[in-house]
Image 1: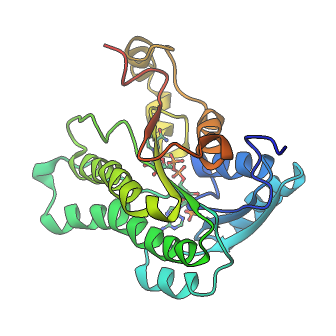
Image 2 (image 1 turned 90 degrees about the vertical axis):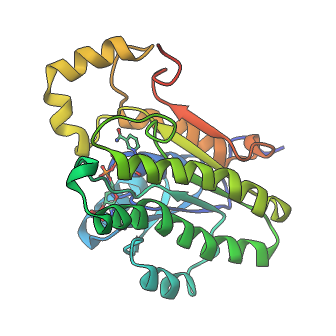
Length: 251
Ligand SMILES: NC(=O)c1ccc[n+]([C@@H]2O[C@H](COP(=O)([O-])OP(=O)(O)OC[C@H]3O[C@@H](n4cnc5c(N)ncnc54)[C@H](OP(=O)(O)O)[C@@H]3O)[C@@H](O)[C@H]2O)c1
């Protein structure tokens, strides 16, 4: 009997996996046996990331594609290898206050963080449905899906929408044996948070605000992705799994 967390024989596309949380997810899926398409927009960074995964004994190859470019996605996915696991991880942020943004700025971020993953998911899921073997879609949302803070309106709207899309697609794609789940990260020590991480006041606030009292290390996201991609999660769909040190649970 195969191991319930084995991804052997599966191909996984992890968007935005040259660095940060995406890289950790890609490396962990590869460690669990998947062949991983490491995605980003820079050939050099992609090659380095794929090499790092291969050096640890995993199977990986660079998959150069700007997932925010709908036309490029449509063209590239028409000739992509069969994908069994899609992780929509690439995301952008705009920390301007609502009053400082124009509608075009607001729309642009929603295009990147909500419409682009929906577009890629449709391309991948159509191929999954055609093959009839089922599949796994995992959306990386945020604790900014169910919660809000000032200066983050477009991101919060997009991530909240991606969370709702996760539930909607679980219903739409369930008849094709495709599960659709989300991982909602809390505060992780990745490059976009480098400045916040240097701020001692933020560290002290997180020590009070989270149950575990600290920042998340990037590698701590990976177990949730392996679980949701694996046979162990075959009856889990439409679920949002917070990986946040207890942020959402803590009051
Ligand atoms: N870090 C956190 O604390 C946190 C918290 C909540 C949610 N999240 C979410 O988790 C996800 C990853 O965050 P992160 O902090 O790990 O980000 P990150 O460190 O900035 O990594 C993002 C990666 O995505 C790639 N990328 C960016 N735009 C892309 C595009 N259009 N097409 C393909 N690849 C692209 C970048 O590579 P290239 O520039 O080389 O293309 C980079 O390697 C995001 O969706 C974010 O909203 C993160």
